[in-house]
Image (cartoon, rainbow, N blue to C red; front, side):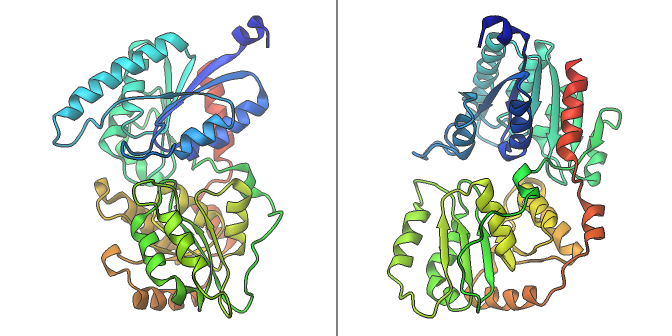
Amino acid sequence: MSMKENLDKKKIIFCGGHHTSSLPLIDSLLDEGNFELVFIGRKKAFKDDKNDSLEFLDISKRDIKFYDLKTGKFYGKNPLNIVKVIGGFFHAFYLLFKEKPNLIISFGGYIAVPVVLAGFILRIKIITHEQTVVTGLGNKFIALFANKILLTWPNSLKYFNSKKAEVIGLPLRKSLFQKPKETFEINKKLPTIFITCGKTGSHIINEFVLSNLGDLLKKFNIIHQAGDYSVTNDYQNLKFVYESLEKKDRGNYHLFKFMFDEEVLSAFTSCDFVVSRSGAHTIYEIIHFQKKAILIPIPWVSHNEQYLNAKIVHNLGLGLILEEETLNLDNFLSYSTRILNKSNISEQQNREIIKFDATKLFLDEISRQLQ
């Protein structure tokens, strides 16, 4: 690429903790070829994790420049956080001054706070997107400095300046709108569960599966995305236990650390129901695929965010909420029977809840901000 071609391209910096939401936009912008993209995020999901984060892996494989921002959460009781946030601001300021982007796109969370504040001071245009029904302190702060606030759910409008806010839905990967190229090998005599535990893995859910894998495989095929966290090492433990089981007269078990788009599509297509925490993206994908689900919200997240996310699926008639402290084999099997007997929602109900053109609406807003 010549220097002139590079200068002609608009530069966009993506930041925030919900990188999955950014990928449909990033892929569309890369396909268009008229943009230079940079990502500011976390190379490690946790400070004690030896493994690279999924966001770093996803962004790096797209050959996009990735900066590992060192910052802290600007809420909490630890005074050291304030020092980390101040350091994060100066680090972000340096990166933005160095890169000179035309636009910042934030997907919220503490990692985006110093980037947005530095961008506002440098008079860089800012778009922020809220994925959840309720909004946290970080996203409320970010919204003060954003030129445009894009929302997933109409219920979120009450938290923001109505002159800047617009409901567009949640951008979903293009692959999720396609037909699966392959499906998982399963025992057709048994129903299939898709257990998805997020990029760092839900240790509670993984431990439940680990402790009960033999009993679960007597009743189900399992597609299990366990995540990757070097401290708990759930993936390796699950793999070891499965390899020690007798394979006769059991459901099939497909274990992954992470899943690529085609595998996610195939898992949603193949399964009879989903088992998951209730993060914003998983909730939206469950509704998109009209899949029944047993949801186990994280109880300690701010503003009870995950429980409220799960309530959306529950109120649609698609989901059951299983409290973390009651997660045991008997309860799980009882909930499984109930969920398998539930009816699916109609296509019309589905379209009333989620927007299928969220990516296009987001890209249109990017174009307006870059004018």
